[in-house]
Length: 170
Length: 163
Image (cartoon, chains in turn orange, yellow):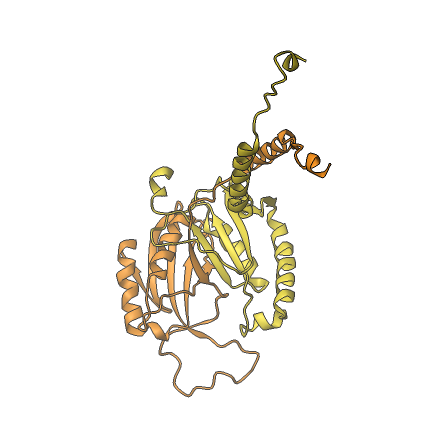
């Protein structure tokens, strides 16, 4: 009697399960979005601190007289002025001494001079830009900045942004 | 009845292989599904930067901020939802409070720079967006203690497409 029972064929109806599986498959096919091919520039961007030029602070000077005072830091400043959204002028330097850069192609060479000379002395690098400047133009400047290397071979990974007063304002 | 008249031959197809194949496909889609794509505004034309690195998987929490210009006004999209300009600061304040709590820090810790929030702010800005809009967003993030940013770019090959 037991043998007869085991010989009976039991057929599962897979059609309903297949229907359900196809439903799920269609859902995934319709909602599938391949991730876009994107790159990224990773930066530490602390808020800018008050500026002091390299060499302006004498050795042994007490900068912590008042604990509430914010200590000015040695800063390399890159100012990018805009006209109609594009780059009009670029100035590089340690305030108040700012030097014009004739074209963005020469910005890399200009920055290299600062980084090879006293790159390690800069505690922050600030990019001042006009608010009308379009992002793609500013990213060209950011790219050149992030390709700079300190004397120890480390890439510049810390930047701060400042928006200059709008030129359209009276 | 017709089957029986023909001699009782049943013509049930064997569905097991097709079911196997469908399950394979479902498994594939489940594995490659990317919920982060829902946070991306794919209408943006990102600036083309040749030296940008490809995206690496990052274990830290990240917040994707899509910024573009809409007829002179800032258009901000976070997590697939549009946000008006005046809503970004309260939103970031809430995010910052959650991040500080998760990291076991206080706002004073990040304010004096002794500690940093590990969270990444991902800025996806349109290439034609004025810097003023993006600066507003970056500044709002900095005010509540976020310091680590990722600027999204398009690869160099995308330049031809944008033109």
